Picture 1 (cartoon, rainbow, N blue to C red):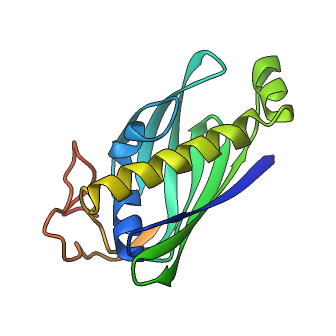
Picture 2: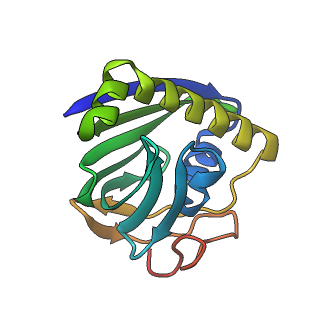
Picture 3: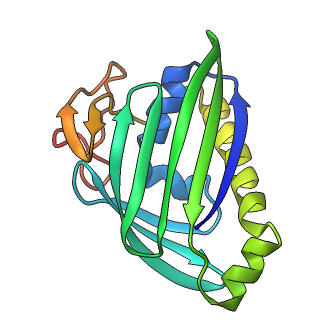
Length: 175
């Protein structure tokens, strides 16, 4: 598998950056090519994205999630991929976000794009859009502050923003 790791600093508290990242169904707002993310269960997401000019679907499981620190996932069907996003408080209102994606390019278009750094460039752009999105809002669209270990919800907590998500938005009571 190929991999790309990129980092950005955002001018919001770590909990704000993390909380927004738990709102998976909002990803099309700041991720190029992501058409839709549906949260199927507390730990399962269905993705639809345009890659190399064609629509690609896959399912991914969240395998690790720790509030304000880390979210890790791996695909279980479709396009092979895995990754993690880590959050580090740098100051009360500044956070470092590090995104690592592992992927298996398929077909000549994806392999050529990976070789030319297209994926790395897209991730840079997506992180910049995330930065713009969360800094302009100043608060997350929702939150989920529970914990997932080895793909199992070990603690369910809806945080303090009062805007937990629900099926059709992201997850709420089930997550």
